[in-house]
Length: 116
Length: 119
Image 1 (tube, each protein chain N blue to C red):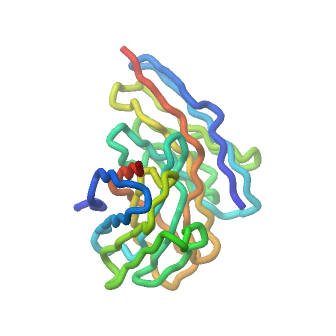
Image 2 (cartoon, chains in turn brown, purple; image 1 turned 90 degrees about the vertical axis):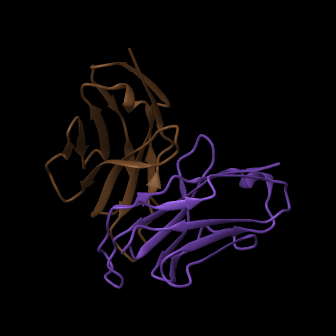
């Protein structure tokens, strides 16, 4: 079974600063996807970024980038130039690629507060 | 492109009552998921459909929860009878997975969720 651990329950960052959210996972799979989702108070889960495990290059999406360390099973999210709209819960999630089932296994989340 | 639609957004019921949630996935998405998110936790998969067939329902409490996706599009999730511990947000998601091709996965897109409170 896969597990996803987010060790930072809450974080705070000032507007325009950079913040890094941590995520580690445990799996015996070799091929998988990793995701970061954002959940604002509206509750809708919004995809932030996706990383395929077979790709060595770290994924980037505008102000969001990841540091994917496959050997260490680490997948951190860096948010640059933080904006007030980035305030939300952030969930790290794992999806294995074998078999027909494709459930996401989520961590417990990190609550990010962006302040003025 | 319209996103995943869910209704209702909020529901309050007494324990032992029944409740049903509805989900309409993104057009063309073959795979549909129902997740349960208890306060303070990440979502947990209840059931996965591919078209109108069940792929994974190992975490669905089948004595009280049921789900169907009759025509391979809309889906309903029902709880009967509800317990206090069923209070949670129920999220529906869909993905453009290729049916029958194991290993071909895709990103899941989520609806706004239904917040259920059982009193």
